[in-house]
Image: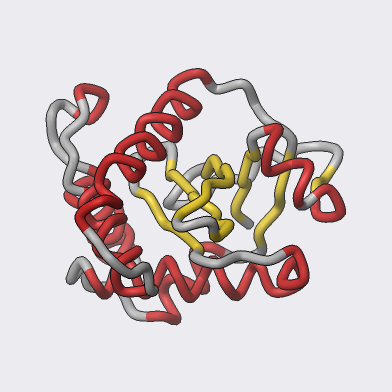
Length: 172
């Protein structure tokens, strides 16, 4: 099971999926935080992993797709890993993510800051593109995942996610 803590803005959109209590279940990826952002007037969801600060964006999200959010997250996470050439098979991702559980905000200031930084960076980078399809959004997300962070000892989220996946593979 994977815990995803939402911002207040996202919580209002997916209120039907918000759980009441958290269960402290740990998996190799740890918890995720999520928010909503708009790219070219289209609603997107951004997920940021707390261990690696790795970002995943679900483009053109609609509340009618709320029942498929689990599948959308898995597809976009796997597609982003593949786009960034991080070796992980789909079965491995599905097994380690498990069921998604959404909760109200955990008031994690570090993660809120990272999400806000990523959203502002996307707002800056989006002017380099004329159109916004899934591959452009993957490329924008890749740029986010190549940004070094002090919290990661100046490594980047892509390297950290690769380490997490490799470590999990070795213990299998």
